[in-house]
Image (cartoon, rainbow, N blue to C red; front, side, top):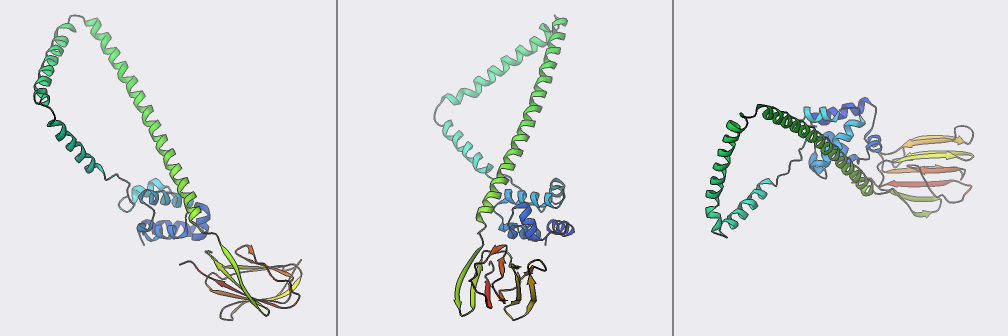
Length: 293
């Protein structure tokens, strides 16, 4: 585990959040959150998204992202564009082609030097003679020049502020698009009825990150909730108007066996209701939990 990942994990645990609860807050898949805590950035969609995910994680656990990026700058991936050498090589190739295309360029340096010399001579004459002969005009020109510099500085500052605002908007847009992409990539839970043999009905649960079974009584009914090894998590009577529901987290199990005394009960798996057969007698349910790889 990296130092940054350990820092984020400690902040998450201090707030009493599980990875699943943090996923609900940030809309980032559990595997990416776990990759951040373990410092495994190779599994991320890219360097930019890695920084964006770390920022969302930090904000969700009340940490300041900018301070974390500065403190762990050797650990957090950067997003520098590495294509500069290739661009430079293209410029050099273009110059070499242009240089051999015409003899005009052979005398161009001489012309430019001559123009530069004339410009220098003129400037020397202007500053030494023309400006000294008119002190009042020189003072006015200086004031106008300072005013131009001040306006230029103000304009440059506004342009920088606008550029920063545009960059922030672009970053927020990318994060929103990535959140939508993550939501689209997350498969929806699927519960299918396999078969019914005698009084035993078998179901399969796929694409679920947890396995929570909840029984809600619509009358008075005796129930028994077991795992695949016949260990009973709850056995007893639930009834409407009294202890009318029972919830058991079986996320660490691969199967649940539920025995129902009669049909006066609704069965939910991760808040999705199962379609039970109509029966006033005992029913046995086998629910197989196919965990994500």
